[in-house]
Length: 146
Figure 1 (cartoon, helix red, strand yellow):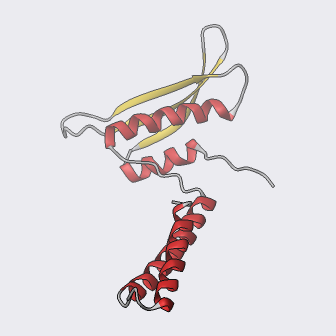
Figure 2 (figure 1 turned 180 degrees about the horizontal axis):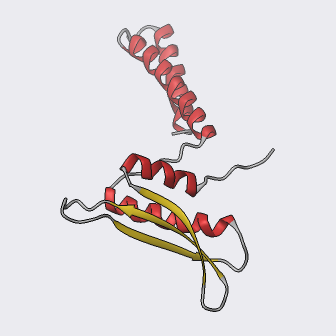
Figure 3 (figure 1 turned 135 degrees about the vertical axis):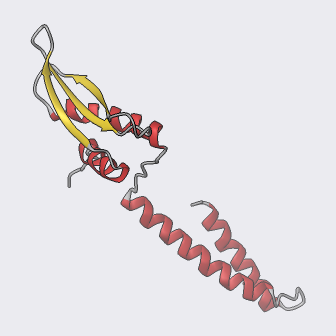
């Protein structure tokens, strides 16, 4: 088994396309002391038609060549674009989605049965009373997951 983390560079490319940015790319520079500096450049169109696009740079220093520097710079750029455009990045964890779907499916089945049973409940009838108590146990069990 292995773990795959999110790539902020690929997410930045998706965001750039969705926001209609004319340009988004990685940048490499050397600092005055010779250390590498990794970055991302994004070009944001001005909302005023008389002005040109503006470039923004996001930098992340690293001691040696590493994709982590580009990833860190891309994350900074995404946060900047979120603030500018107001979008939300949603992280769908597969196991979490599957669990929520199972709980929701069970809750719907229980609620459907409950509606039918409770519509006919008469406290004088022991069979309906037992069904109602069983339903309440199932609801209590589902409440543990919600």
